[in-house]
Each structure stands twice: as C-alpha cells, then as structure tokens.
Image (cartoon, rainbow, N blue to C red):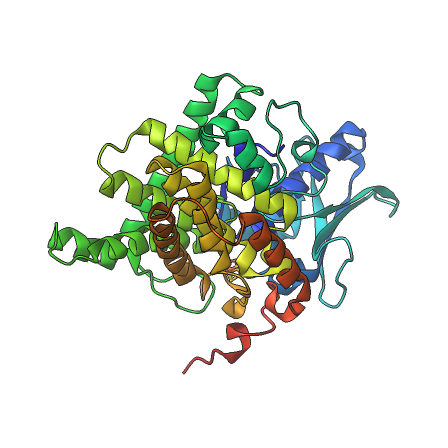
Length: 444
Ligand code: SF4
C-alpha cells in the first residue's frame, strides 16, 4: 500500500517527475557510490536524460535538480531561495562536490531526445567514472510521476489492515463508515496516530505557506515567456471587496489559491506534490475553500480531507498513472481534481458512495486532457488549468452531495478509461512540448 506520505511530498518546483524525482535519484546514486566504497575514486559523473526528461527537462528544472541532488540536496530540505544561484555556479564551474568526496568531480549532461525507453518515458542514467575511465558505478532510474521512482520500497507490499487496490474494494472496506477511517487505520499500522495527524497538519501548513507566498510575490515567472504572476493582484482585489454581494465570489477565491500555488511552483518554490507538482494547486485550493467557506471547518476535517484524497490518488496510481509523461494531464490535474472532490465530499459529510461519485465526476471530465506545456515550462496551460481543476472539483463534490451516491459509471471505470486513453495518446501530448499549445502558441 502506498502511504498518504508517499503521495503528498514536500518538494521543490516546478515538476515532481522532472525535478523532485531526479533530485532524489541523483542523491540516491551518490549514496550507492558511498555504500560501494568508491566515492573517493570518482573523477567524472555522466548524467543521461531520456524521453520526456530530455524533451522538457531543461524547462522543468531537471538539470538543476540532478546537480543539486549530486551535491547532497533533497527536495524537502533544499534551500529554494539559493537553489538557482547554486545551480548557476555549478553549471559555470562544470564541477560538483559529492558529499563525502574529498574533491569536486567533473560532470557531463547528455540529453537523448530521440530515444524513448520502453520501461517508462522518464528515464535517467547516472554513471561514475574513475580517473582512468573505468566505470565505478552506473544506475538507471525511472521517474513515474508524483516524485516516485520505480520500484521504490514504498511501492512494496506492506502489512496494513485494509489493503485495497481499486475503488470497489475501498468502498467495501468503508461499508457504512468513512473512507478516511480506512486510510487512517492503514496509516496507524505504520506510525502512531498522533504522528499521522501532526504530519498531515504539517503538510497543510506547507500548503498554506505556499499560498501566502504566492499571494505576495509580484513580477514575472522565470523561463523566458514573461508570464506575469496574477495571484497578488487578484488577492488584493478580493481583500478590498471584502464579503461581496457577488454570489460567485467564492469561485474567484478558489482560482486565486490555485494560481498562487502554481505560480510558486513555476518559480521553483516550495510546494507539496498533490499528487504532482504540476497539479499541486488543486488540492490546497479546495482545502482553503473548506476552511474559508464551510462553517465548523477544523483540523480533524483537514486530516480527513487529506486521507480521503490520498485514497483516490492511490487508486489512480495503482490502476493507471499520475504521470503526465505517461498519460497526459488527465493523470495529473484530472487526478488532483478527483482527489480534491473526494476530500471535500468527505468533510461535508458525504457517504462513501458520494465520495466515490465525486471523484468519478471530477475525473470523468478531465479524460483525454493532454500535456502540452508551452516552451517546456510548467506555466501555460498548467497554472490556469489548476484553477479550473479546483473549480471542477468543488462542482463535482456538490453534484455528488446532491445525489444519493448511486451513479452509473464507477470510479474504477473512469480510471481504466484514463489508462486506456493515455495509452492511445500520441507522445506529442505527453510532456514533450511537441504538440498542442506548445507548438500552436505564437508570441507577438
Ligand atoms: S499540462 Fe498538465 S501534466 Fe503537463 S506539465 Fe502542465 S500540469 Fe503537468
């Protein structure tokens, strides 16, 4: 069973698959060299990026991520305020100091644009050479979405009381109870309940900090497109208006919170993958909606929201994919919307059937959504897409709560459709920036 803490990771923008996972992979590779006792003999490290990592890796910060990972950094602890400057220095010097190594070593970065690995489109190989050119170690990692690396320990079976792989099983386990209780029982088999709750509330703190920073940071986003940050102006406008007579003002707030997170993400800031970085704005936005607009919203609701959302994320990850490089944006923003819709329905008192219905509605109306980031940056269409995804999640929760939980299309069918649609989708629309808006958008 995947844990809620595998799904929600504290990381660095702009991409979980292209930034967070590559930094973790590089860090892990250096650790392996240390365990093998060859660290002191390394003279050069070659980093090879394949598939989607080669196609959009530079725009998504993969080069920065792997160098900082080799230098010993981890996504959850790297100082995001100095990361860009350190990357510029490392790139200029063309040398990196591996932790535990007496001297800095040379590195080369090779992008294999034409080769698409069969195992997964996001592949990277690290090779360490000694002074005479001998290979001291080599390892290939696959970044499978949401910051996960293929075959990680957290993907291994673990002893939990309520294992489930699909939504049908989850519903049977929940019975007349609550989906968040199923998840809580699984999580407390791994760590004390007090720790589960405090870690989830810490994730919520990080999400709120991200929104706060996004609402204050003025200017344009990096990368060359000169995309202006819109959250600060919208935030000021909403604050000036106070409680407005506009019945749709809540929509502006939901859009604001998502914009704030995704603008921070695009700027390489600190975000929580939910379930990915590109889709990191949906869930915090809907959770802010809960806290601002639902009377009686409290910490227990936050915990239940996140646990329920994670249950849906696990179902999608197990049976389809949360990787844009594998199935397009339906697997990223679509999954995030389904997770957020489920979480909101749970804390609004929905039955397990209504929760599952909300997730299905949100996912169904993202099916077929392609990934076509302009200039390979996580900005257009990603930032607005999160705002719209959050609004869809709220609408899906309300639609489900207005029903009785009975519906024709099960969530498992929508997930299977996501997987099949992703398999049929041209690679042009899978995080390669070779189709859609990425090629049709012309700047004046
Ligand atoms: S289009 Fe969607 S999947 Fe692609 S980079 Fe943007 S947010 Fe991620």
